[in-house]
Amino acid sequence: MKLRLQPIRVFCFHEVSEESNGSNDWMPTEQLKRMLLQIQDEGYVFISFKEAYRHICNDCVRTRKYAVLTADDGLQCQLELLPWFEENKIPITFCLNVTSPKQEKCGRPYRQWYHMEDEKTEKQFAKRLYISEKELDALDSKMVSYALHGYNHDESAVEITLDELQRDIEGCIERYGQDKHYVPFYVYKYGTHNADTDEVVRRNKLVPVLSDGLWNYNDGKLIHREILEYIYRTTCQ
Ligand SMILES: [Zn+2]
Image (cartoon, rainbow, N blue to C red):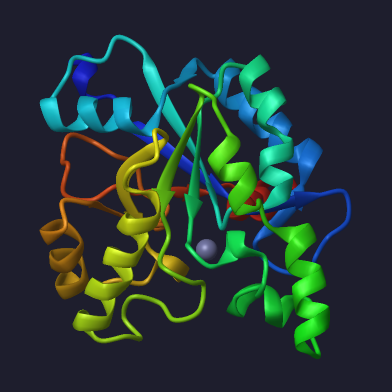
């Protein structure tokens, strides 16, 4: 068997805590840890997103099974896990938008899940929910990278025009493009995309990233991800 044919698996998760937020994008913290340790027990070595992409594009021979971990939406609970990720040699990519770290608004999905009634409540909640701009700028870890997840967390890439998507991407690059943690991946909100949006993303020298449950072989046009909450709901509960 050609070892290069081994897939690279890219996982993603969102909110973790002790108590459920009632959404499908949540899982218990302990369960996330258990699943990641189990993936390692199955022989996978976690590598950075950038390293995985180099493997996929260059058709590298893979003598080990590789996995990548990504975390969407820039949530405080994800940053709190960083010491644990470092201890367990799991590089982490935070998929960030530009407005959430300002901690003013919560974005469409969280507004719905937490039934926010007014702007004041939303702002207070955003301060607890998101990693702040200050924390992102101060972070200095070789285990961390920042990918792009849209300018804000409202419309998906297919709900806006291609010109708006272009401006969205430019805004993201302007915010994160110079950061030492930056990696050129564009993680679609809500997982929705099409050939035209992929074209705009690639024109900006970014790699489109999906949440479609598939594994990655040696095709660098798109990155596929598996959603850990989905695996948790279907196999662990
Ligand atoms: Zn998201």
